[in-house]
Length: 453
Image 1 (cartoon, rainbow, N blue to C red):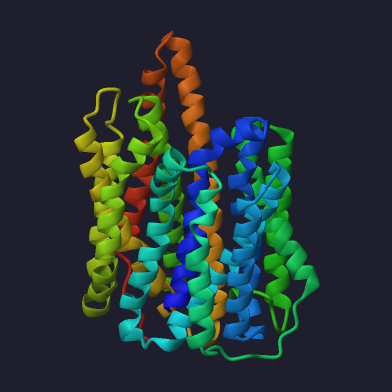
Image 2 (image 1 turned 90 degrees about the vertical axis):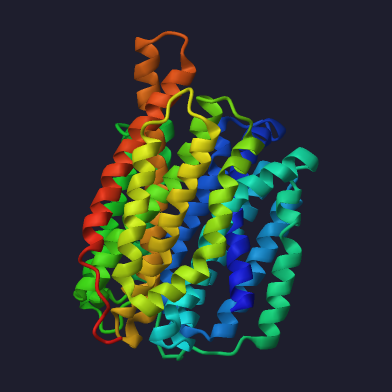
């Protein structure tokens, strides 16, 4: 588990760490803001394309084969990115990094659900939840510190010792825990899945640049949606589908997937919008912004294993419902933020928010997968991980475009008040997130412990 979790942390850290350096990299490589954004977009796009394929790969290859491939790809991608002399090579490194993470995340969950009995999975998933939150949350803070003291290359170099530890530790201790089956990879399904998930993620990612009415954005989303529909129909008619959609026959699984989608949609967009609000409305420096968000992230990391044990002891509803209420309270306060909000209020609200997300995230995932029979674990994991990555990409694109639109309309009405425009845009985004958070509170009331557990 240590080998898998360290590699997962590095992958998720890399997902957000570079975001804080995009402005600097845009000048270094002399490319515009639209082009440099591909360093973030391509990461999400690669995850959206490769995670769905992981379900069948986990049935075809051994745990060790999958692990060695995942960590090797992450190491190669990280070294390539760290030494990149040009933007194209840096982008290639990011894509290879993301490919490693796309294998590692589902593999880690599959190992947890294979080696831990149902009554101990909450604790194990709590530790994975720590990794899933700590990586993206600490990324901007640590990257800001690195940028203040060293060059951007060190955002990558600093992770290499951790990846080497993961590889050596995994080679020494990681056994093969999954059952290998003779499954063939259906080429048409892979192509449809790639076009489907890739088209949707690409479309929404480009909406911030070209606008939601752009022909290329609408076309990409429609092509992606049609491909996904065709992919789903094909899976239901195959004897050995690439992704077994029978998992959706279980109501608790469907409920968990919807709650996960809302949680990731809200969380990943919040991790982008909140720093933007602090920098544009309150004029706080990037590194200081990271420090303000650090207490909530650290407290979440410390409490994640405890939350997992509470899940094991008291059941899902006792942990998830209070968590969704804390998230809703957090967004209700975020929505009131203006140009004169005190920093301590942001710190306290973020602590409340991250505690809520910590209680919801891993617990919902654990309960969602516990509701499935063992043979559906690889498919259920691939489905939930894919939906989470797509939710994150869609959430960031939708919320950033809403923020920009509100800023523009506010600036037209109130001249020379960029700070007020940023605050008004952020408030609108957080109000929408609040409505989604309330939906999650209601859904949490229907969660229960699966009968099979």
